[in-house]
Length: 541
Image (cartoon, rainbow, N blue to C red; front, side, top):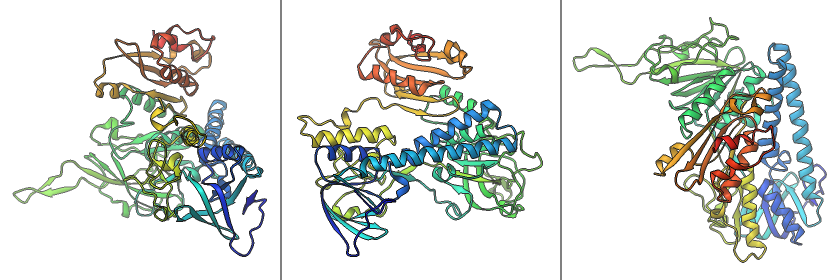
């Protein structure tokens, strides 16, 4: 049954009170899976979801699946040449958005009915907050609903982290990933603040659609947690797509531009030359997100180049190097320098990470504590600091993946189903990840820099993707494969695959690692041919 949903049972004028076995706050992967399992076991369950647009959780509505739908459409547009003219670009983008909306709407509806149509489950649409250790009030469109539950599960996910930049919340044209995936019109120019994997996925996608993309990174190192050779290969791939990077760049302010776009005031550390015009005095509408910025120290890390589609007369302006007086009163240059200039663009994506979504829950009323990073504090069984309250998914500060939320469900269910030994977070092995760039990047386990830091004795295995027959057949020879193997034992410590279909192949490596199979197992495995997976024979040789 449901309350305050598109096919809702109307709530009475007086505030209803529901007593239930379990209350799940949030319709994400872990929560919805747990709800179905509890219902099948005969438990009464209430699921509270703040928005009817989020039935099914982040992945289905604003995360993994809609972004992958758009990425596939963008790749098709690139292959078909539909990104070559303004007219074909707009048509391809419009079709991609339409398909994305169809997919998310269909999945959202199926997820809603999968729970709401069960007799033991009540779905309530509204924002929930704790009023006591086992009591919650849900603010619905028809009024508040009070819920008392024996067990409560917090599954509210995460929300985009918005840095404290003047104008970032009020300037039209500034988006999080949620808004950027639902535009009706394709931006011709896009600036992305942040070069983490979310930002890079969007950079690759919009570049494939034909957008001129510039990525601003606040420090000098690209993908600092990855091995240098892997990071360099990823960056080269993105630059080949036309993506421009500006490093050591801090956005100081954002404001509307006169032409209806967005103007960013950006400071770049280490630049030694630049125009003397300050951003505030730049005529609104001048400057281009793809601009020739020269005179930077360490040019490979701090220089962008002019896009072929941009007007070379449009350029950002930079203030001159700051000076300070010397001991004798004469001015001297400060070290290091910082240059200020403007970028004007059509849209800005803020991709600076996500933070656990705990705002408005009034967790203190239930005795639920937070970590220093603002996540719900949990133990290895995902129990919070309050009895009979658990936290699943992104809200508990673990890896922000849908499959981790699903695994969190397993941790919780193992405690509720009478298991002699519950499954814990510490039992979780070798979490893989994939980033869906034009050439997908996937990894599991340790990379070389982590193995070295741990003092392990290892050997590095490398294979260019161009040596894989199936990659040549697919006309996708770009990338590299890399694995780290313990020298004396043959134990697989980790793998990094920048390769077509890496998101599928990485799961084979994870399985081998989970089973403690030595590298020789993958070296000698019989794979079908031609496949990308058979490259593991050569990688681990």
